[in-house]
Amino acid sequence: MSLRTKIQALSRLGHSFRDAAVSPRSVPAPAESQVVLREVATTKLRKVEHVAELPSEVLTTTTEVAYDWDYSAKRAELRTLYEKSKDLTWNARTDLDWSTNVDPESEIVADSFNPLFGTDIWKKLDRKTELPKLRRHMTSYILSNFLHGEQGALMATSQIVASSPTTDAKLYAAAQVFDEARHVEAYDRYLSTKVELIYPPSPHLKQLLDTVLTDSRWDFKFLGMQILVEGVALGAFGLIHQTAQEPLIKRITHMIMQDEARHVAFGVMSLRGHYDDMKASELRDREEFIIESSRLLRDRFLAQEVWATVGLPQAECEEAARNSVMMQMFRKLLFSKIVPNVKRLGLLTPFVRRGFEELDVIEYESWEASA
Image 1 (cartoon, rainbow, N blue to C red):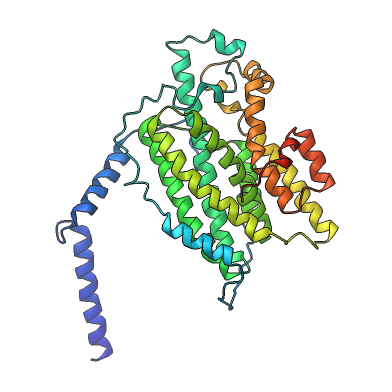
Image 2 (image 1 turned 60 degrees about the vertical axis):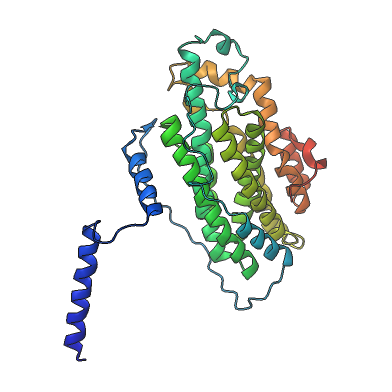
């Protein structure tokens, strides 16, 4: 066959594919696919309120890319974790009951997670108008930041696939990328179809995600995402799962928690021994990162963006949130997964200890580590 004949044949084939693409009836889709397409179409038609419209954003990064030509297992526990991840894969579309009726103004997330709970401002709220509105906005604020954090984890873990020096870590990181995609899907669908309200990311969370994504050092991505962000998320998910009354978000949280526990374990396994002989100057970078990131994670739950949005006095609400005994307890408990694992990695140095003491979370150093 001449070159000209080959080109003509490919052209005809291309026209056939194009005609099939523009004519959905040309090839009947399987029944399962038709159901999925109907679900996607229904989701797109639903109007979702956004507190603030944010354009897409591009970060410039310098992530290292590391080959590993030795494919043999160097850490058996990481290969075991990889196998477990494959066995426990779930489908956000089919394993969750999306037909569940959800009242977005009900107590989806326990009132006790609201920074104003129990304060004088809370007691003055109108129970028929102001409280339902505040509940919807707080649910959206909390879950929206979980959603944004999962997107950050999705991108950070994809970088870990490229930058990890061992095949063991690359394989598990690839499995985690799929986990994070499911988490993004689940939270986005819940917020879009049940709460119908999405908040932008907290500036504190956004600052931390930007730092993790733009730092070129592979261990910073593990430390920032697997140990710190995932550690706080695991603590928050556990508290919400124990107190949530709405069955769908309770189920979503349960499914995601199972994945997150493996993600934290992945970080601990991958970083174990990495800091034992690190130079003091390089170690100081990690110490400062841990404390600064911990402050950002603590402050992301104060919901500063909610108060003016729902028509409450901003300064008064911020002060009440900072002084709330319930919120102080909640924010401390979030570190119950972080402090033990930082210690386990040999990073609970005198510098980090002082930082955790200032954050009033050093009490968790004696708690059992997550992995």
